[in-house]
Image (cartoon, rainbow, N blue to C red):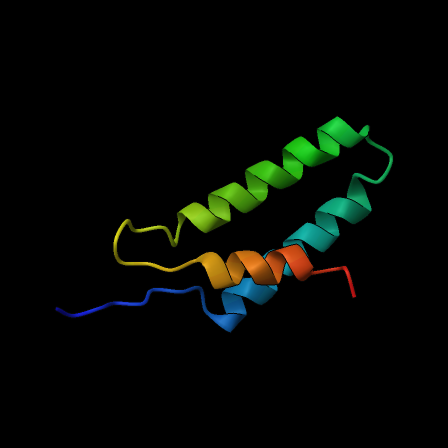
Length: 71
């Protein structure tokens, strides 16, 4: 059996973090539900690009995004 580990590149991860930062900067005055909905849509769409059932492993990227901004 072969195992293909499809993960986002570092460049792609950096790009989504920049996109999140820009979104938060521009939507800081919005209500929390609206900000949450915007972030969820953006992140879910990005992760779906790398989700191939049985082939990809985007969990590490999810962990990196969760810890982004908490340091």
